[in-house]
Image: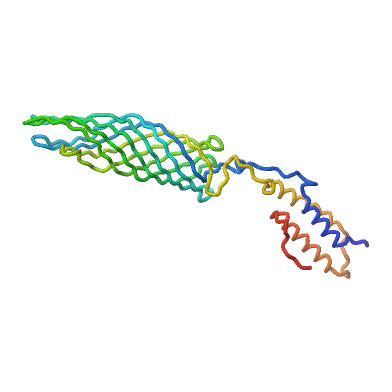
Length: 307
């Protein structure tokens, strides 16, 4: 019975692996976005929001001693920010962000006692924050996260205090330091743009306003919406980058398909009788296995094998 030469079998398989594009689908450059949004990298953005300040004022002095809880301001704010995210797992993400903001929260509070009166007006201004965040990807395009860290705020305080024996006016700027935290979510709009909605609570430490005897301890509640521009980095390509054709999945699929076809053609040879030796068939089988390894990995240098 006629047999197919093992060398011919090896040659057919190697030819199919070496020239897959000639017989199969030509390589196609696939955009990175086809594998899902790219979250890892640097970004910048801007946000706009609204909120208010809840303030605890302690007013003390000759003939006047009062505590006022709830006096505060409301208004709008705008901010710019920049940061970096890193996707540590398939769904987990951590990041670092720095933010500068300007808040126009305005309001006043007053306290009175027999024979004495005080009115305090407060306006917030420039603020800043350094934040960490950790999140979970609900789907490839939507991030749910918590953020928190250090926050600072400049507060302008002015007012008038009237007590037995005189009246005094004051105006001062105080730099408040504290912490902030809150939840949010972010979603990819395009390859480079993402939008987020976030709530944040901030608590600042107690300070005395000059020599007035008035101390304050403000806290803020803010909801803000932001738009971010992402430009990659950290060794990760941006979402609109096109992968080289040699890295495209179509090349590997074509190589594997061609190798399987060649192996199937070679396997249709007549089965040798029990009396016939098998060393050549064993060598051909090992060669085919190595060829499949080349097709699957895309490595142009096959692993070493022996007959």
